[in-house]
Image 1 (tube, helix red, strand yellow):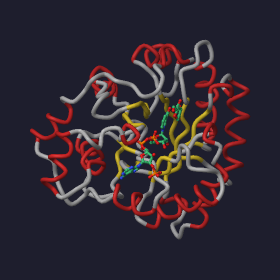
Image 2 (cartoon, rainbow, N blue to C red):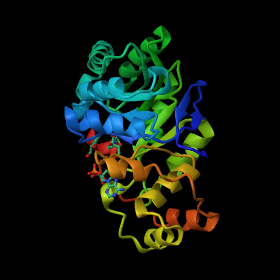
Image 3 (cartoon, rainbow, N blue to C red):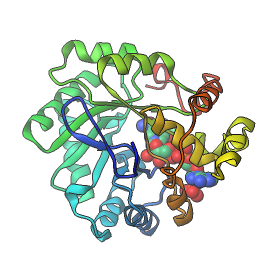
Image 4 (cartoon, rainbow, N blue to C red):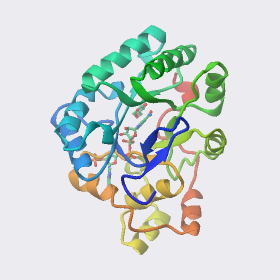
Length: 274
Ligand SMILES: NC(=O)C1=CN([C@@H]2O[C@H](COP(=O)(O)OP(=O)(O)OC[C@H]3O[C@@H](n4cnc5c(N)ncnc54)[C@H](OP(=O)(O)O)[C@@H]3O)[C@@H](O)[C@H]2O)C=CC1
Ligand SMILES: O=C1CO[C@H](CO)[C@@H](O)[C@@H]1O
């Protein structure tokens, strides 16, 4: 990726921007409306929300307020855990679409692999995909064994797996598996919610390029082919987080950031959460 608006081709041919805005904890109402509008004004073309975030209406309003056509923006939302199952997912999708005030969605994700439910959830998503109201379907927080389980019965292969991913959790096994299966990885909490900014390795690299630690981490995502969705509601940070296309990390720097891995999650482990 050479610019903020470059896309990555998913395994169904759909083009997804490689960089976007996450809106978890962006408050429904003016806060999320402003964040979405500001991001789009600064060139973002991907917005990541979820029914669980309770801010889909504001996301929809921000999209309408931005002066960019709908088909140039890529919108992701997710089906939450208590909405899973076949009929439940069909209903949840309709509700999300209504709150967003959209007539189609770019990417719909199974938010977590709810045991005993995610296959039925997937079947409903396949139906919506076949009907053309979703351009791509994918998963989130799936381990390799969840993906294998899903794909045994699936007609449509997941395009994306959105997982916790940052320099303290580099997900080596999952990365290898997804590369082999052509499933695109997407990083959530790419900046470990601010807990990596004091790391000496990252700070030294940031100083060298006159960049912030956040920019170095996000650049590392881009150069290692991971779609990244940093969250911010602060206009200056929304702008600076995306200002990562005028420098390039060396192979050695990428290696040293990847070597910071501690297999450390900030969020739940999918095997014990649901
Ligand atoms: N699928 C899933 O289960 C999950 C998906 N997600 C998605 O991933 C997105 C990103 O992950 P998230 O957990 O929000 O964490 P991030 O790693 O994106 O960190 C967000 C935090 O960092 C702050 N921040 C942002 N930019 C900067 C900066 N340049 N300097 C200092 N602080 C900064 C933000 O505050 P401020 O807003 O004030 O700038 C916020 O507190 C979510 O918003 C959501 O869309 C997240 C968790 C789970
Ligand atoms: O999307 C999400 C936001 O972050 C939460 C953790 O803090 C996750 O559980 C959830 O999946």
